[in-house]
Image 1 (cartoon, rainbow over the protein chains, first blue to last red):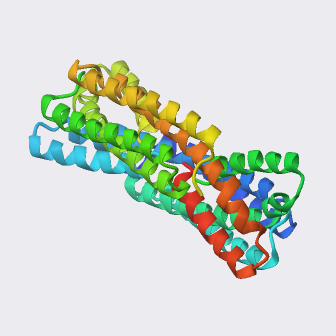
Image 2 (spheres, each protein chain N blue to C red; image 1 turned 135 degrees about the vertical axis):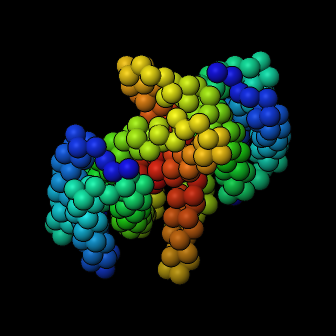
Length: 93
Length: 93
Length: 93
Length: 93
């Protein structure tokens, strides 16, 4: 399922800020800034992406995962838990 | 110390590609794409940033860290290892 | 909810193996083994613990989380997603 | 190079504590303790192992890595940085 409207606006705003950080990083490297300063800024952009990932993960849990977990079909549910575990351990970092 | 020239070009090119991925992510969310597809793309951008981080980390080790490790002053060296451990465990993810 | 029986045996067996690895590590250090060998063994024990964590996480999703997600009370469900996100981002590494 | 004496005692003491935590985990599961409590304890043992890993990593940097970085042979140094990056990104989590 796609991302719900209220979360879409929040995600897009955060992604615009991250886009700005990535452009800032290019300038930092052009300007010969110190390694540690660059690493701090990379870390901030990674943290930003992690934040967007959390919004999307929660949306995934609230929509797709919930629908399947509510299903009465046991085989479908087993498949849902497989997918859920896969998604969680791949993306929840 | 700042990043050496050859690594600067490589880093900037990678950051430009990541900037494109971040813009692509905004479009994916506007276009109502599925959560999992969005999570995969976020993960790709994070992997890209990790790659740039590795270039900068290596530059840091080869320049700053190396100079201090070569120093004969024992106190300065101890301080270098403290900083080195701090940088490694904070940024090498 | 506690861990279901079939998963309990599997988890305990894995934990016994990890206990052996931890004792092995003590011997490696007493025996003056190389740092890299010790780091490899630490990494193996961490991977083992991660495996047990995945069993427990799946049990958590299949029991506690499922019951609350099925609840019709919207407020209870919102609380479940908060807890779920918290658990996932804290323990799914 | 092996681990220096003062760090060996510290590492072994920590590993003994972790061994106790792993045994405690087996009991928790036998005793039907709640999933979240088990996950918290697994997390504590992982944090403990991470602590031992940091001691060994620092020892590695102070001994092996330092010797090679001080070498005047440029080819040997390049190889050291390759190994160093490999060790750092594999084990510094």
